[in-house]
Amino acid sequence: MKVQFTIGVFGIIFNEKQEILLCHRRDFDLWNLPGGGLENGETPWEGTIREVKEETGLDVEIINLTGIYNKPGKNALSFSFICEVIAGQIILNDEADKIEYFSLEKLPKNTVPKQVERIKDAFENHKYVVLKNQTGESTMELLKRGKL
Image (cartoon, rainbow, N blue to C red; front, side, top):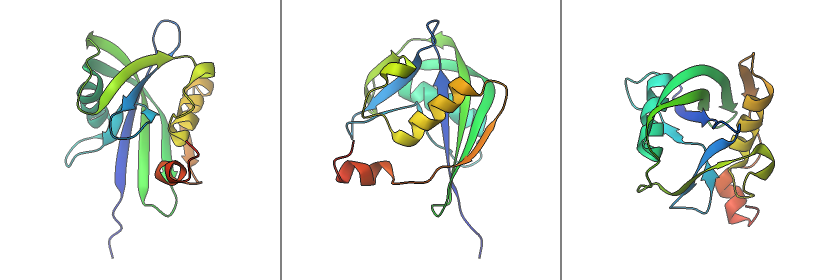
């Protein structure tokens, strides 16, 4: 039987103060990196560029891959890329009702935990691609239990 994976792609965008861009979701009270699911026929870097544009209004170019994350037992992989803004302006949309930059020390408490880990990896591992299994409860499980 052929194993099917879902593939997530996320842009890590820093401003001049080394703050990270996050989007506040309309469907849940959560902050996350701009990104989403890879579409059929896309490369991870093409999907990241598309997702960032859809969720923020910003045009970006990929600078480098910072991490590949596996969620054991879920058949899910996520790619994180450092991106540089090359055009556009932040525009709220159907997916995000707030889009803001945050310092690492002041990330909102309701930021998706696995994405917080990816953000920290991007800050700490500038020279290497992080390859990591991400375990623990899902964001939805944490929400249901009132932990986010």
